[in-house]
Length: 320
Image (tube, rainbow, N blue to C red; front, side, top):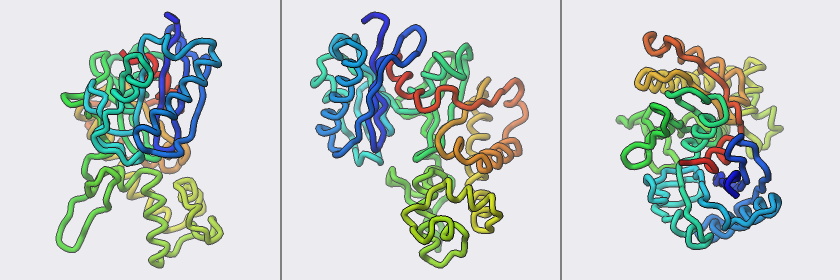
């Protein structure tokens, strides 16, 4: 078992477990299991089943692993394994690491999903050989992972890199910002994630906004996604053009400030919204270029995530 490791990528709808070659990052076997229930005990059972299926396919026992790494789409309190806030799971202050450790019988290391994705890219992907890296994903949520001085940077309480929860809109008389899944108002994620963009478009169409998005989904608002907005933008739809301009400005400015602050050698971009909406990605990079400090871009390279959806489960498996 020395050459193999077990990792889990726990999102809001699925748990994916994989057996990973420690030396190469190759996924030897994997299994994805839907989360039919989101209570902590039910999720532990789902993760155990996914681990058992993946390990069985690789011809090993899950308990034979020295440790299991887990990336969770939420805020994790350092090395305690406590998930402080996971909006898509509906969790607050859940000692998930302890629960899974007791059920599995081996030590469990829990970290934020984008931190582990950054570590996966550092070990085997677009950040390999680079000591200072910022990874930004825009998908159903928004977040970043930070590699500083060659090490994963989690911060004092384990919640460094929560780019999605910086504030981009503040309350003022007559204006209430959009509420984020974390419970606070005005977060970047509330305005730019795929889930929140779709929710906003549905609300605004229901309130009378004129847009070809409604035509593209044939009147079925449940089918509204960021991809449909991208399609409407390509058709020159004024609503989609204005929305993408706003989203790109918020994302571009936020990422520019992050790069200006941390001065990485590489910026890695990923996530279903950014990679699946090239017009939005292009606009975001233009706004980034306009806002970033010139001194912070000397030597900076920008790359797509090489490992794609595998980054999280690979990074979880080889967490240190």
